[in-house]
Image (cartoon, one colour):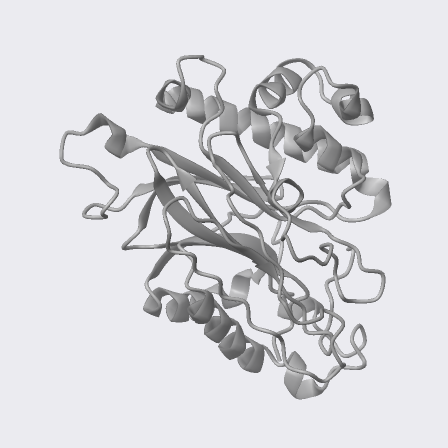
Length: 332
């Protein structure tokens, strides 16, 4: 069984009608997948070799253009990447410090998007991509719009109710770096005449906070809105100014909920939602979806696969599923 509690699939357009799909998934690193923590799971279900095969199969079925992974075991990255590379992906593992055993990894389908650079941050990695040469949306040689860039930030923020301030600071620092990169690339001018216009930006991953948290409010609120509350007050000076220039971002599920329901929630125990996809105003989310089957699955039932590929122009799909018979990520 796949030992991941949540994954999302989303597709979005950027630039002049260009489109890409994205999946974000916390894999549950083998370091944390122990029978002490998950006594209901079998030894085979916790085996990384078994889980790795199922993870690769699921990602192959989803076939997203961009894959954002969290809790990738650094020591085991090469073997996982070899299999994902065989699916057509080129990827980068976040640089970590002090021997930290897990990291984020971002991968791009090489025939769709090319990663031009990355930057590792505290609990995040920025990846900047452009359309692959020869892609139908790439434009002719010499076309200035061909350099339309997509900024993808893959995050795994600090966990725990006592770490709210750290999460706010991590997001503020990340937004500052994203703004600096966009200004260096002139991405603002490519989006609109205003120098403060938001670049095509997606921030996805494990935020380790719930929808009513200060971090979620900070990302979702327009600068000057009272909804920013303590989140805005926690950011100072240049960091606050840079963060505000990219806000508000849109929660893909909140801004475009599935018309048939149900409300987005985890199917494991307390139902906490910790994973999100946020987009800037330059990225249009057109549709979100959840599995049509109930999320509260019997314990030993296999996961419900979600692979929504809406091929129409500016199409967007989103989905989430959980195998209730397998370990859920903790609030670490």
